[in-house]
Image (cartoon, rainbow, N blue to C red; front, side):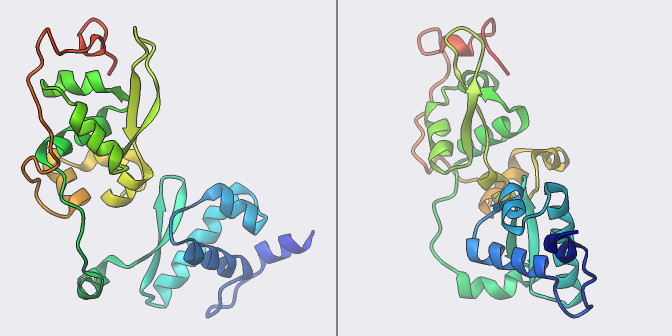
Length: 224
């Protein structure tokens, strides 16, 4: 058994973190953003499967000591965060000007992409019934969606999916949790913290016609 095995299997004292827990805590704190399971495993010199045990133990320690911190899982990454029950008291300190809320059109497109990913822009347009160039561009600029591949349909249109930033903004660990949400309004509330606004991000939408519809958006070539 090497030194690392001793560290991993050590029985931690009730009021103290183990070496690995302290190291994971320091790494999460210093990063200030989600840290992947792979990076934690490499830094802690442990197997991937052991990372979750360390994180769970760290979270248990925080809860047992009524800490203001918790560890959030975001996709396959982890991040230190303040406990939700403290947010109202912290709000005044961290209050700042935020980006304009997403428009109703952008939220509608985001919801469609989240529930149907991977999906092409043409697929979004078929569901919405209007040109979606602008709203897709807005969501890309905000970092809420990303290109995840190419469709096999004619023209090889880009496929889109949501990002870790979307998961973080929504406060969910993975896309499967979307199944418990009711749709556009709830996605609006969790992503923007407010009701959906009017077309504030400058979309200039137009109904789909034979002239402006893309080949990828046609029913005989669409990929959902």
